[in-house]
Image 1: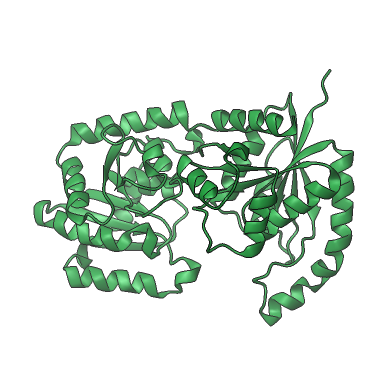
Image 2: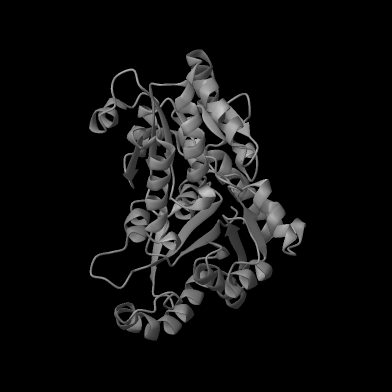
Length: 394
């Protein structure tokens, strides 16, 4: 009987972002007849366990190896430095023990995101333990990323990429195309039920029955296109009276608290402020999607667009722009409508077209849900990753 191949995921982050969600889908759905799944996960520095550990401990069949990582480069405040001293002192010894863990558990693949600490651990650990390293790139790759992250992506045995668009950016930075595996993201359709009751959100926000609702869910920063969306919405309001816009999300950390205020000011300037709801971050995104008639986010050079899959899984048509990884997710004319970047009139026209045609919204929503079930499910993603692992190990 063939020995199973061990795969070790590196999770040094205490948070649990979109990349962690994607990796968890892989952990959950890798073929257990071929692979064993392990995670080196941070225990955190606080008495309460970090979100990443809580989430991963809930995954059946995943072996958790609590790990003390070298403190991150951004942990520079006095408080975080003091709290991370014990972790920093023990990290080198823990790394040696982790190397022995890799050997003992027949781990042949060490896998992480492109985040600097995770990817450095992945490449370094794989080299000293005789395993293969996989760095999973979830972003548009370019020269703006840190030197440690670029070194790791360049020196990993293989790279996973979330879209053909991202693959092209990694190649443009000098990576050998033959060592890159393009594995499109997924969502778990079971978590996105089109029969979810959206009336709760509508009542909470005081939206009158019969009013049509646009929703845009993401962190708030310039590349996500909220500024352009407001400009298009002002045009939409000139043609459709009974429509409101939900802008859901908090300012991205690098934007501070200024961008949301800029957006609110722009809404007032355009005369649409009474019809725009800035909700901040919410945890009930499925209900938000259920409350809307269509989803729209004109983000520029989106690496993939998981939120588009979430909207499609909820049976909602999508209005977005035709660049980045978006056209790999949203099929123009089938599951949504795409326009060219910065073309505000075309963006507005696509929104109006769907608002004015309930039958088209329904048809595109149904096709979007079907597309997710057929092409963007976790089983497909895990099977492709498993074949790639076997190729990498040889």
